[in-house]
Length: 83
Image 1 (spheres, rainbow, N blue to C red):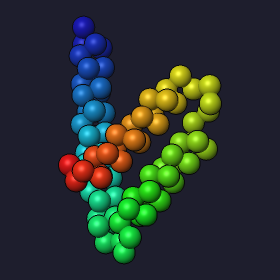
Image 2 (cartoon, one colour; image 1 turned 120 degrees about the vertical axis):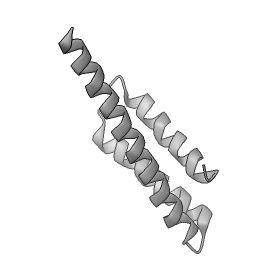
Image 3 (cartoon, one colour; image 1 turned 120 degrees about the horizontal axis):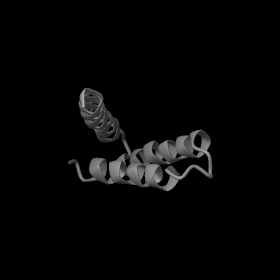
């Protein structure tokens, strides 16, 4: 029982850390884009590079690959809409 509780606590901690990282990355991307001369171009550059990084880092046969790509698109939407 204690092992299950420790796993649940570890999962909660990872979720909290991931949410914090996501908030910071969205903030950084937003600031970078807002400070650019051509905001649309910078938005495209930032998230194209992110997708390129996924392309290089995640194997094509990885079952989570499409979900990771979808998360990058979600982050782009989040930043684009200033949320």
